[in-house]
Image 1: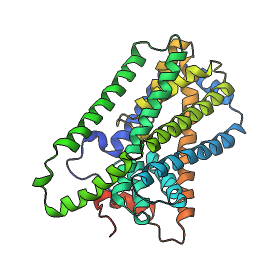
Image 2: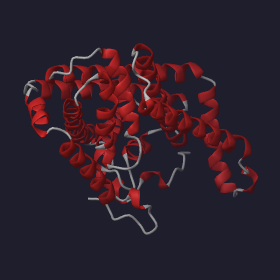
Image 3: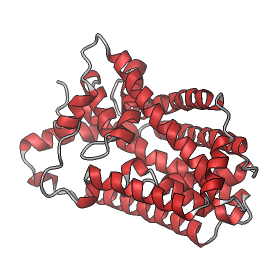
Length: 336
């Protein structure tokens, strides 16, 4: 159970507000769309598909583990695959169930912190990995847009523009921080910590091929998740080309990054309904497949937490509860 947010926390970051946002959006979708068609679509899903899809979802994230470890180790983290797997699956749990003052990225980094050579490298690598994920989603969506003759309507263009603006702003802020930040005005203690950050930046910049490889792995992961959703769609009767999914699903996922609801639940489904409409997919069916995959994400998050717990038994690993009480990134002192 998480603590209540401290005073001054924006309203949209409060857990009850975000949970309420998810409930409201999903309720509006269910009310607005033909309920009978929604139930009928969900009933078409064979029972044997659920465990197969869940196992596939967790196995595909092995690519994500390898990608995250590649980027953080490029920066100098020195993380083993076991530690990376434990931290990554703990992050899957956090993405869905710890959305208030902590989240999946914080939990993931917090679990790995005690076991890495450089904490600054871990934090920098995790940031680069998250930006790479967004770039990968945009790249997969762009491939789908090229292949889909009716893709770029007004709503989808808005998502692309928002993504471009977000990446441009992030790049500009990063450039300004690197070139204009008044380092000399900081205390000696802080400047000494920044040495480790500079060292991690330098190590990452010296291996650009690792970043390219990580983005390629990210695109592969997102494309395979699209294929998984495509197969789920086929089982309930959505018979459209795969390239349409390559366009719609990444954009819906990008829309879910907006910090409005619990783990993006509700926003992703609404975006999917809107983005599928130009391709003739009924809204009830688009919502049904979105709810099916949402259930897989939720159960996968629970199993991810269990996997993280199992991998951490006997090695003194901190529990997930500790990250809901005191975020682990509050102290980023490097070892040695």
